[in-house]
Length: 125
Image (tube, rainbow, N blue to C red; front, top):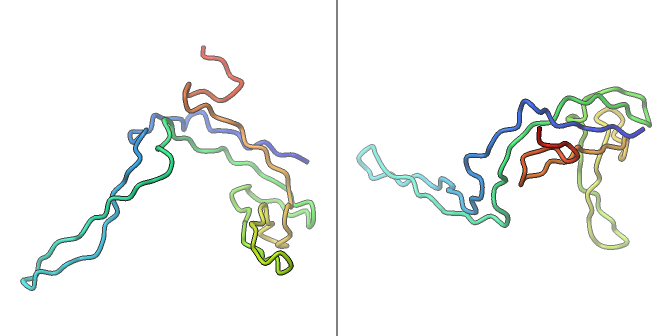
């Protein structure tokens, strides 16, 4: 069974940091020997700009197809698996938090258009 994880329409808001490609990361504390000091700051560059809008997803209860346990889609796990024959690793998604079987359910995420601020398929009213 495929579950659709919908966007919580009440949570959609403009991102005050939209378009930013840099951010500040606090660094080490440098004591001055007199009880004070300064903290270094490092400017970091990110690969993609911050999105125009932020939003949350609605709660979606799913059922594991292996053990029939019901839980929130937010409780799904993912982890790395090693492929010793190919000498590499890959990510395993949708791991059941109960039985630990991978691909325990099929999810489809409602899509959001960052340019228009609308859920894809909806019209501006």
